[in-house]
Amino acid sequence: MIPLAEAQRFVLDACPPSPPRRVALDETLGCVAAESVLAEWPVPPFVNSSMDGYALRAADTDVAGVEGRVARLEVIGTVMAGAPLAASVGPGQSARIMTGAPLPAGADAVSPLEDCRTDRDGAVVVVDHRVSTGAFVRWAGQDVAVGDTVLERGSVLTPGRIGVLATQGTRDVDVHPKPRVGVLSTGDELASGPGPLPSGKIRDANRHTLLALVRQEGWHAVDLGVTADDEDALVDALAEAQPRCDAIVTSGGVSVGDLDVVKVVLQRQSSGTMRWMQVAIRPAKPFAFGLLDGSGIPIFGLPGNPVSAMVSFELFVRPAGLQMAGHTALHRPVVAAIAQGDFRRRPDGKTHFLRSVATVDECGTWHIRPLAGQESHQLTAMAEANALAVIPDGDGAATGERIDVLLIDPQMVTTAIEHHGGRA
Image (tube, rainbow, N blue to C red; front, top):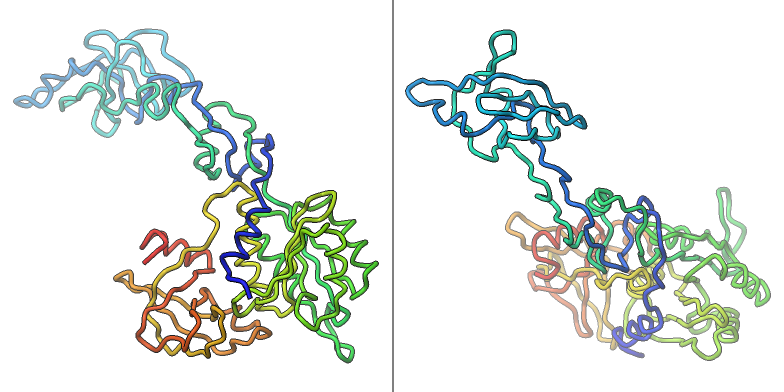
């Protein structure tokens, strides 16, 4: 058996970030920037009002509020958003102004509408308090100045960052594209759809599960269907898949004692790069990985048991796909949690990943509860789990002990980052 870290390094070394591609701005959500972008334009592009109110000269209000005195200012016009006022605001004058409208020349402050009153049918505005210079004014370049970095290379394109780029008139960005990941199930025993199962058949859960895991990462999922344990069928399936995929995931046929069709075909099509591994973990001990000839596409051979396939995806496919997409944070957060139940096991030279439910209390302390049904074919426990308890080789952990926990639920990951930055 080989250590988990060695197997992961072997995979990651063969899955570098994909070459950058120019992508339309509105298609970049979740992509990783392959370039830094500098601001060419100030934001806001001009001085404007942050409130509906009256643009004025602050000095004209110096006497307001002193011994009951007020400032009475002539209203010379109205400034609407997108329509600058041609006239300047002089001493003793003001202009009605809307939020976002350009501040007229001569004015240096705004008094909100609710802080003013008018008389003479709106021809005069009355201000009963002193207004400070710059009050409720947005200065040109206050948010973004020319030359500011508005997108860092390596950062993820979020809705906010896309919005900032839009303020610069950006139409497209160099990003590492999200990988197109094909999922193929193999096995004579597999069936799909409703109704009674033929004798000896089982329904294919792995393909649907793995496709969902691909989509959960925001990648492009390619359904490659099911192939029987037939060399020609598998060769044809891989040939058809390669132009459509950046990576291929198969399930089944990698354990000792399985039909060797998958092993034979992958070995033949990978020019010796394919490595068949017995990783020192449970579940997901059997694992295969290599690069297909010609295309150089990574192919992941996952075990056929449903839980093993999911854990294998989590430990190998997900980090590799993230790296291909340009990410540098490749692994889920690990937190230390207090065991709420016994996590017993037998020594076998492997690290065990036990399906569990993690919670965090109001003090930020993590707790972990084991689920029943820990065999690699029991998918229902995995469906309920939001974490994997990481139990090193030995006799396990007792109630009350602290153990490491790998958080596999996206909401739990968010909670971990908020509470502990990913590590308790």
